[in-house]
Length: 121
Image 1 (tube, helix red, strand yellow):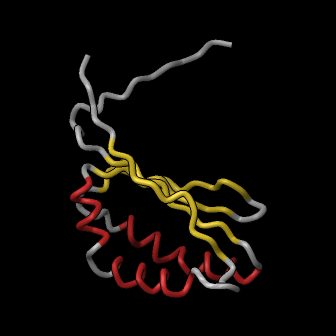
Image 2 (image 1 turned 120 degrees about the horizontal axis):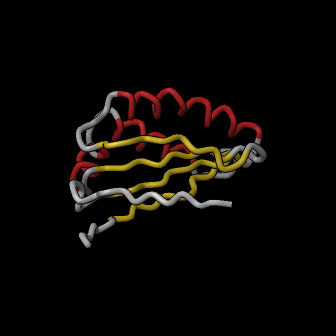
């Protein structure tokens, strides 16, 4: 089988940040929580906040439901500025208050930010 290798030129984005976010449903009631977050998450990237280069939805698992997203940000400052702005700040604080306790039905997973320095060869 022939392999087709591609290399992305990221020299325009020396401070690129890639973030993975996810939520796994643990109980049937968690499906409602996941579905309730969907419209908010969709609006958050549809509005194309300053610095967001690309948003991709990811499905890691159908059973148990495990949904996520991968986002590419120009730099950490842009990502942090957006996370501290409304309405993202408001609904994220509400989600954190309501999502961690027993019986919530969901679990936040795979949250990581990686800064990728670019090198030129």
